[in-house]
Image (cartoon, rainbow, N blue to C red; front, side):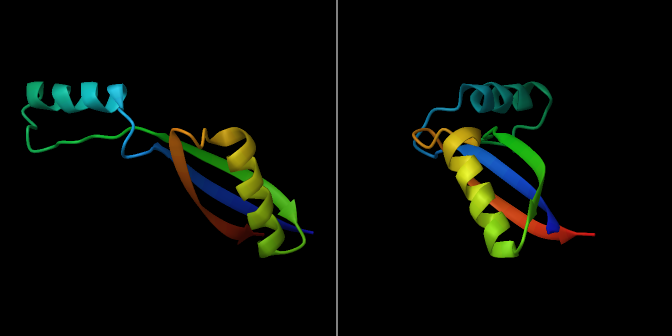
Length: 85
């Protein structure tokens, strides 16, 4: 078995209102950073997985994202996978 590290990003879909991002965007003006606009806030998840191959690890991470880590109605996800020693 090999060990892999998955770095997962879950973000609200573009068409979904992001109230937390909207609040941060508004606060940027108060900090004198009005050039920063359209902030979107999501979550970053890091996990380790053991699998026989990169393909098997990728399939397991994809399954975890679809079934637990992301709400596919409102969120999208992407991940990077690397083998670790």
